[in-house]
Length: 228
Image 1 (cartoon, rainbow, N blue to C red):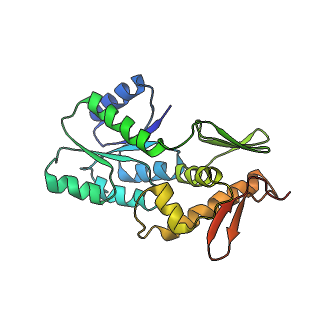
Image 2: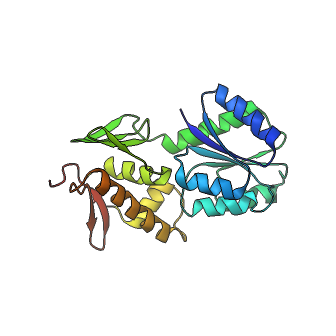
């Protein structure tokens, strides 16, 4: 089940989108403004965001830029402004797709499915096992001896990528490019902070195991069989 965040200040549009997507098997979260959406995007594991452009306070384009500072989750804009320059502005802010209002719910779901599938297309949808550590790619869950820990979407993506390439060293720039799938910009510091959180959560979940190792002046690697 994919989890999608709907961001729109129009309750009728929200209700229609939610009802249709739920029938298609999606789990739905809702936000009425940019502040709520930013909080959910930073704390919940999301597979995609459907984002209205014209909202009071923080508009959709500004919100997209803020989300892109910490996450590479697919973002699909919905807007009554469908001129070419409006679409370009949304895509330049980091959006993945742009759908003009009025729109077909069938097309909305299809575009969502395509964007989510493209992001996860190269992933094996099974469970990576390293002793007592399990990284469940389907449930997007990390477990150790049966105990699960909560990772945000970007934190999980970083850990899963490293675990799928054990023993290989990746720099911040490579992780940014491979996991976020977007050019390196001002997100380097955010990547460093996020990587620190991943290691901290792993240390709390698996004390003394040290699955992720820092390679001086090169980056990080994941050890499939860390020293006890």
